[in-house]
Image (tube, rainbow, N blue to C red; front, side):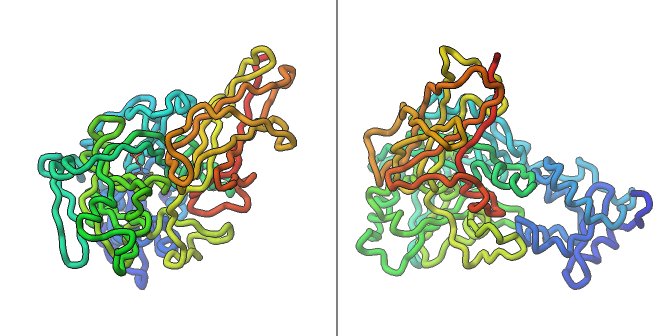
Length: 470
Ligand code: MTE
């Protein structure tokens, strides 16, 4: 790009408003982002960098540098080169991710900074209760390093605050609940790919199942006089995490009050996962677990609970996990009107074989395994598999379910399997799966009519192609 003009950091600094134009520098490039600001998925966060280098921001939101798609997009905005003396070196700023926890090698990263990763898909159906080291991880920021001995949870009701230490919480009546969490963006990659968008984030494995131990939120609220019958004008319960954006704004999300006060809603302040203290990645020392709702509402590293007449104003409530119609684009989305995603629609995924595997036919059959999950307390009642693009279907066997709980209080996934008859003379095979839940909800056939530019609630039939070993 030697044909482009050379600018100094002083000249870049003059361009930090929409009126004068917004420029940023990155390594040796200078970029005019003025027209891009309203398209930026992280909205006006990008304006913070205007007039200066992107590097310190991208150290925090490192997925930008990990994505060739984003780097290509940036290059389309290039207007010049930054003079050599003003270019930053890595040693000029701190890495906010220097102190991340160690993770299993079986967890495949989707993004490294912040860390988001899923278990190898073929391992997912090996355990009904997912071992903690195999749980998917979805962080938006560096992992906080908290000390349970000093950690407090503040409950704010009206003008009054009550402070709970971890000791006090652990002395309250305990509840153990089996809950699957799934990220709203699960299979977002497949949905967005239909419009040619290559994203950083999820394939089909952003889901896991655990037994959580903690205190029921309804019990904590009852202790301050808030019940299903009496919750005044409060409409939402907000949860605030300890992890903070570069702006100092913490992760915050909310759920409707009815879910929080419902004694059978099983919303927990959880301090144990599968009988052990939470690990740092999963919210140590305490997190929310909101059964049946999208994973985002299960706030990790919980520090505050606020009763309010409004939803939380964090990005994950207001922007990230909202769904729009197929024709809406980032430039036309009305975030204020769009409701936040709460309960998760019915999903099913084939985990074995994986797409593009080479599969052996044994006695005219192949082994197929997967999971299915429905939010809102629904239980899976059937999983159907097709080898002829939906002309005929055969039911899979539902091998593992939480049989102690039923609709509308079933919070866990179903693991299923099928010995699928297959003509071994075929070379290329395509199989489809779909699930049906206790409310008779099922999945749409394709992504076309449920497409949304956020890539969320991507629950079309799961379709995979693979080869047979001759
Ligand atoms: N809570 C905080 N404080 N910060 C986060 O980044 N990520 C959310 C939720 N809670 C998040 C959070 C999202 S999007 C999901 S899907 C789940 O945590 C993932 O939980 P896990 O990492 O324990 O699997």
